[in-house]
Structure formats: C-alpha cells, structure tokens
Length: 347
Ligand code: PHE
Image 1 (cartoon, rainbow, N blue to C red):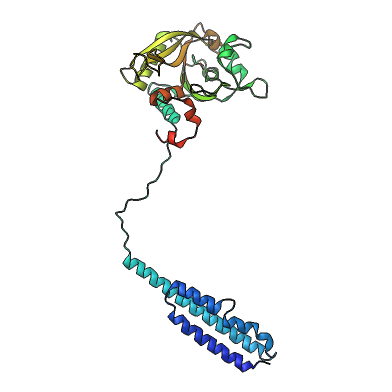
Image 2: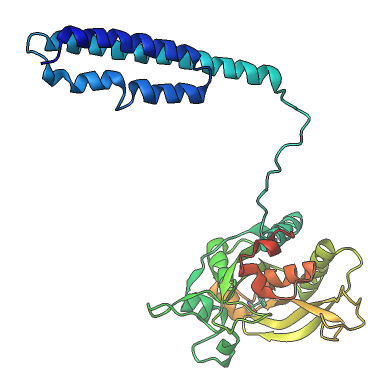
C-alpha cells in the first residue's frame, strides 16, 4: 500500500518544483518546454492521477482533489507567464523595429479590358457621337431571321457565304452575322425612322486560321427613313472612318454583293502600315477592307414592315476583331481566344 500522506507531500513538492522552474522560463520556447514537462502527459502531476488506484477509497477523493488543484494552479501560472512573455516580446519589437513608411508598397496587378472590348467601346463612342443608338439582339437565331428575311432563301447559293452552326432543333442556329437584327429592329420601330448600331457575337462553322475564327464580333449599322440615299451611306462611313482612324485617313468604296443590300459595296481604308504603297499586311494592295455595306434591299424593308416605295435605308457591317487587328498590328486572330495573358497584358 502506498502511503497516502506521501502522495500528498509529493504533490506539494511537484507544485513547488514546477513553479520554481517556471520562474526561469523567460521566452516562448522555454515556456512551451516547461508546459510539456509539467503539464504534459508524463508530467509528475499526471503521474499522481494514474496512481490514484493504489490508494484507499477514503483517501482517493482527497488526493484526487488536491492533484486537480495543483494542476489548475500550474495551468494558471503558465497562462500568466505566457501573457507576460508575449507582451514583453511585443513591446520589444515595437521599440526596436521601426515601421518604414517610405518603403514602396507591393505592386497590385490590375485586370484589363480585352482588346476587342476596347475596340468595341471605341466604336460605340464614335457611333454615339454620330447619333447611333445601340440595339442588341439575340445570338441564337432562327433560320428565318438569319437568312430568309434578309433575302437569302433556302438553297440560295449566297448561303455559302455563311457557314452555319445549326442547332439540333430544326430551323434554329447561331447567327452568322448581325444582319438579322435589322429585321427585328424594323419590326419594332416601323413606321418610325431608325438609326441604330447592332453589336454582337457572330458564329461561323469555319476552319480556324490566322485570319478567321469560328466566333467574332460584328457591329452593324442600320438607318431607315424617307429620303436616305447612297450619298448618306458614303458620307456617314467616311465620317466614321475619320473619327476612328484620324482626319487624314483615305477610304474607298468598291462594288460588291450582299443579298440584303442593293447596290452593295465594301469599304477599304488606306493601309496604315505602308501608307498605300503595298506591304505584307495589305498583301501588296495598299488598301485594307474594313466593312460591307449597301442600300437596304426593298425585300428586307418590306419584311421589316416598311413600304420600299416610300422608305429607304442603308446598312453596313464591320468585323470588330478585324478592326482591332489593324489597330494593334496583331498578326493572328487566334490570339483573341488564346487566353494567353502575355498577349492580353499588352493592351
Ligand atoms: N452581314 C454582312 C456579313 O456578315 C455584312 C453586311 C452588313 C453587308 C450590312 C452589308 C450590309 O458579311
């Protein structure tokens, strides 16, 4: 049998020793060592708990209680020392280490607008100044809107100009150009005059190459009114080109063909790389094509609810990536969708 009084006496010694050892622990790491030694699993006070089974039933609660008190006293002593040491360390660092407010801060990296978004916004700003209102229509279109109503009936050979993504639902497709928006706008506004810009993503089922992507942006212009002439079209586009590219830009219109305009044309700007002399960018031509345009075809006016004998209008469609490429001399359209930040960070 263990001498019960002996255990009680041991507890006193344990407490005294521990508190004495604590006095010499002056920093955080020696405090942690102390804690392991005097409050850890094999600490002397813990040892007393495991020896409780050896003492008599009557003495057990007394010794148990005393052991608990010792343990709590040691814990409290530890907390006090720990707080003191922490505070001293803080005071020390506050007085010895000075904060240098003149040090440069850490640079923040900012997000940027995608070059195409930047070009789009420039176009919007120029067109807004010229009195055009932005009109958005849907990306998922019907065959009727995308083709039929802009005068491209089924089996018309001109459909070859637009390789199309068809949905599994018959008659539903991804718009191949922004021109279907013409009919939607006319149906909303007729018989009022119209002067709008239709921006948006277009989709074509094409071989991806340096020059063509399967999705790209267009901005379409549409005006409808009583006395709109080809002269208005030409003047407006020349004004647009000057505002976009500067006062000295030279432009030219070439005859072309689109089923939804008659007559149709394409506008070129003088190559800004070689100034018209001919270079690899303009493939020796001295000119760069920037848009297709023409007078709205009578059939399209009629489909929009306007009487073509009373009303006329012009339309134009430009490729935004193309304009962006020309602006920044980007040699490959695939960079726009490449998600390479080294490319995107340049703008
Ligand atoms: N929709 C034509 C295209 O995608 C561009 C265009 C628009 C041409 C309006 C004339 C008038 O190529």
